[in-house]
Length: 263
Length: 264
Image (cartoon, rainbow over all chains, first blue to last red; front, side, top):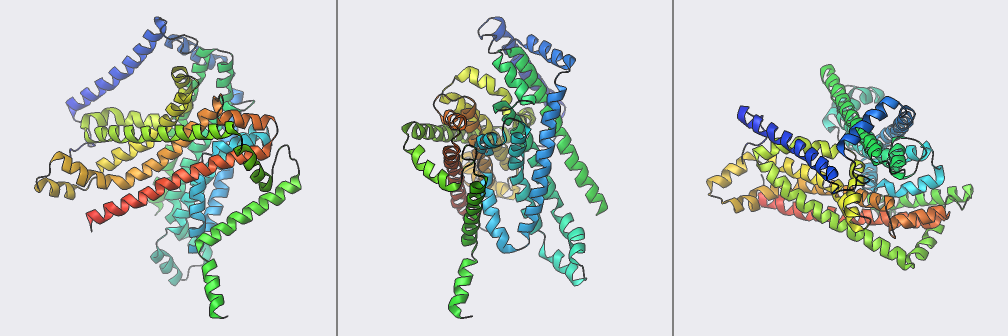
């Protein structure tokens, strides 16, 4: 097996970087060419310069803040609901082996269903406001959090539990000093997956049926046939998602790092 | 307690029965809550939904929409698996390809694919192509990632042993690489299936001429929650069935690979 993943040496690095840059430039060039020669209607795919201009215009106008706030609020609230419910239920289900055997397959089966199919029900029940998005986000994020919590708590090595019981630890002490530290990495991973899923599903929900929010802004432009501005908002969304992903991964590393030092 | 009572109690303590019990309990709770809430325009008890199930399935249009969706899902998944495995092997086994493309793949995996939906719609139009493409866009990345990771984590000892025994390239693939790839691959494929389901159904909901999206919109706007619940229930059952199929396949194939490798 060739040694594939080890860090690149000098000449290899140059070759790789050149290829990546060439690909990026090539894509941009193809985009420009397609729109400049009118091969593609600019209504469907606007020229890159127009998209850039619109994006800058969006930032300058500053009207996106209220919708960003709505989206942000939906994400936070749905994540908190999912986190609290998921960890609580996950912990409760992990206490007896029988409960784990009963509930884990149930949750895993439900996790396989794209929650978006339930979204029409939420919209019918909660309306077009933020509540339907919060319900969607919370439901979507609940499953990975609960599943990871069950696995985390149920997978604590028996010998740790036995040892602490022999040393006379109370339930509370065991929880605080043995169970939680042992389960922590998995729970945090579950929370990370949940937050990202909540974000993705809420944007999707806003694009399908909503009054406010970033997704709604994109759809507004689509319906008004302002393709360039729509792509401008899409670029905005892309940057938002990259920032969110970076923050979430950084938070996870920071939290894991701190725990390791304390242990 | 008599022996028989012990046996009966022991049987009903088995997880399968308890799961059924909790599901029935949930259905009962739903039924009672719906009856108490009593607004047939917005919420429907499971009994109504079950009746509506019969009604909507007798509608040829609904059956066609469901069959269409299932077809799109299967095609999108097969495409995702085929390309995911092929590209994954190429990228995972080549130093140059890995370093050039892997970061890009991870980034693409993390961004909301909704952002490229307008492009897909532009290129494929309103028909099945868009749904399949969108499903593919969601499903291919977990499989790609799983294959690349699987190829990287090959047991060096096994590779050396096979080499020493004079294995040709195709022997390598059949007896060393693929068996070790299988467990991770199936996990990736399960995630891929979830992604394909999401992509296809999302596309159907956005742009639907006579598909699932058309019917969900129609049932919502006509305030027929029972039919909506029934349709959603069918889709959920479809998702669970597909996932279960993959799980069974996984058990079948990992059993084989473990026994081939023996105590490795």
